Image (tube, rainbow, N blue to C red; front, side, top):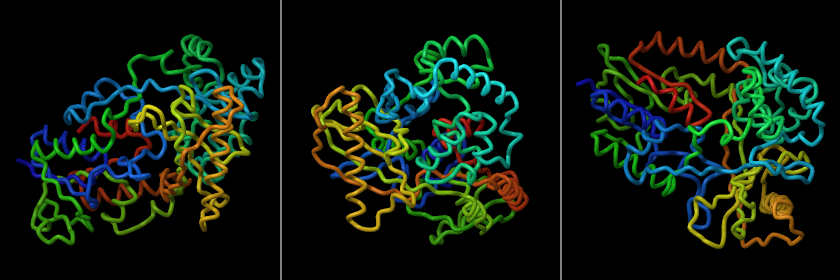
Length: 449
């Protein structure tokens, strides 16, 4: 029986370990923390664990759902069928889709002109041809002259950085920059998408109108139960879990691999293959003792302002993007699905912790909370069509130093060079996987294991 090591305790690493057991390998899994899951476990606020913003399993299909639920009854997933919208200039989009922040700025004729321009521009755009493009250049190629300045200002609000300073691939997590956007109401978008393939590349529409096979899932019993189910299942199928075990480096020994750790007993083990599921910025340090990818990454710190309010304060919306450039909040999420209270809910307001929103003392923290409260109250009043001030029971602000990991312009050129160095040093039996921006992409990246 081949003996293999899986490095990492994140969502993808757990799936990798399970797949390898099913292939008949003896699997050892190593991770540096006390529990599996990392960021998925959320943050502790008011003696409960809360999600930092919307932590859905987006765009999962039936096969993905079956895979996750195979970890046991506590890994059961539910489809949230969520509703989302946006806010700009005192208006909330009525339809269940994030119509663009500039939707009300342009009339139908101008939106058709924008659509035509974007469709033509997208003919000339292929991600493989633009490895060195900045996000600013991507906006030039796909958005056209009407949107560039506005989208760049939104980029600075949401990420705290100008689009010229980051790589074009970051558009995958930026809703107002994506090549596919909502330019029209849902039914119009649906009909245009069906009429011409090129429109399908440039238009977004509510998921319910275009597919009934993709879901936005959430663990029925919360992420902590899901991750506990992962651990129990992995142990039950024979995975040898090693918690609190940081791998410092890897050595080749007679065509096998030895893991170097502070635990000397681990160094006595030899592995036929090593699978690395964690972030490529970390495994570069472990495998090559260099730090090039880290220096080519922009980490986005965020404040998460938690606000306890009456249930239904966002109407039927799961979350809302705040595209108003005068506001500091970027997205407001209703965490009702994470709670067991019939009368109250908790809203999570996200604020980019850039140079304008730093917390240096309690006064700064209070200002962030109060401004977020005012913006949430204003948006809630618009949603509920009420002049009554939203009742707030309590509020708290938690800062997470690293949320999004945004590559700079030279990131992928460095990555190609690093991957070649790793292959030359370790060969094909050391298998790593690229960092992915969504959990769906993480699952897809390991389909061929």
